[in-house]
Image (cartoon, rainbow, N blue to C red; front, side):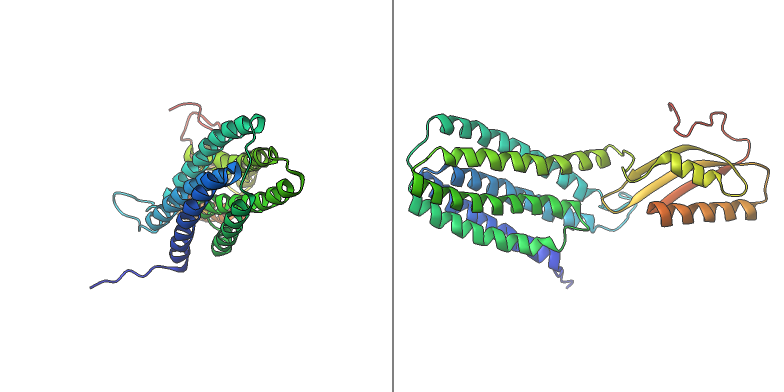
Length: 298
């Protein structure tokens, strides 16, 4: 019988899911009994985190799907969809909590500071462990990074909750709880917006911001034998793989061997300078009537 073994990334994601379920339970109970909005906001944020990490895990497993007749690029795009969905979760939860924080700001409640502090410290420990488990995978995966930002925000939230408990204990200023909640939400939205924009651009197959098409055009047209580069498409499959397709018009009717050499030089430039690891190049002579870099319509 074939046995599927979990890799380190999968194991860490599962551990983080377990941690977040536990955090959600203790924080929602702690928030209700202590009347702390900061804890309640943390609990629902952790619930969204748990959902987002489950999505990240599913997407990661699907991303390892091999290329097939049905999915010729495999499941690589799955993690981008997960990043997009996770950023939406951030926005929805943040808006709901912001509304509640405004209400509590003008009608602050007396909070059980002892319970609030204990629960916040437990949340801080588990969130900190979760951040540690995922940090090493954030450089090469936007999907994992989106979940990591969720968890990093929770860790910061827990720190803020502890600080607010100390302030309220000393100064009896109970509106500090919703105020700090609002500050947390603003920071969460700022971080989530970047992932939302990048994942949206990838899903819409926009040109990666690292690639200047005009510079790319000039470099390809400087190759000996190339007259024109046109009908170009550059997009991302996921956060690591860039793709290119385009038409290269030759300045004379070269033999196939010469044309193939031009193609090889072009692919080398695309890969080494622009990090494009998959390219489809159409070589032609007196081919297309339109010579625009980007074809206007289809």
